[in-house]
Image 1 (cartoon, rainbow, N blue to C red):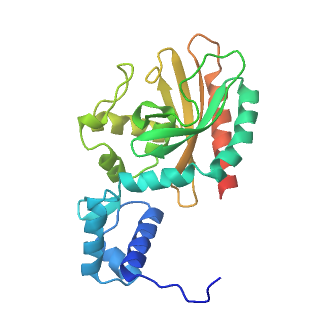
Image 2 (cartoon, rainbow, N blue to C red; image 1 turned 45 degrees about the vertical axis):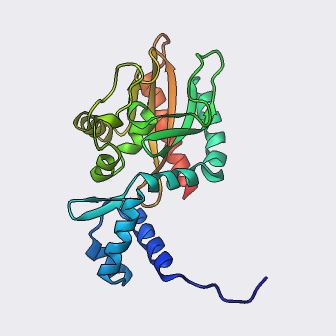
Image 3 (spheres, rainbow, N blue to C red; image 1 turned 180 degrees about the vertical axis):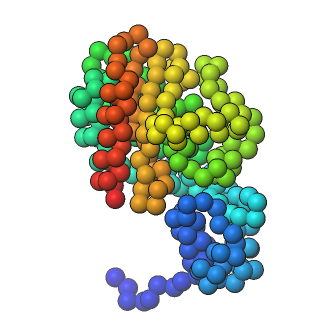
Length: 251
């Protein structure tokens, strides 16, 4: 191993510090706040933010700056690594045994969710949520649970216009105002729901898994058929408890 001290590239160091600060904030930040907190010249902060914006890592909204889709891709890449999958797998096994329905854990990746763990219940319908499958976040319970935990500016950055709203079954939000209404209802209920937006005849409930800063790193969900006699209240309680346990273990 070399004893030569590592060389710090100022621009790279400053950029990483800015991204780190933004990732830990509860919402978008003013450039002046970033400059003062990190002791970086304001002109330099603006130059770095402009570069990050061009590359899709930040978005400029009402004189403030927030993380954008490329940053979510990086976060999703990290979230798909070992900790969530390793800790989530036994929790899902217990959850499925408890409720008798299929369960899964998903993470955000841009405007999609990616399923990283799944536990299929015996004698239940096949699902489209295999590990590695991507689905539009605004149509899924897991995606809605995580979107509801994001600042409004971040949601706006992810859904800038009608073209961002993919459709599968003709159901679900088709505009930002409709999505915002749905997310307000989700926050009020403390749980996200989905009924036929992904697959006709199937419904889901999901709860976000929040990190130490309150950022949604994943969501736990259960899915079942409309034609069964599933106790929705009992499933919701069990999913909420599993999500809270996973959040505690990840911290």
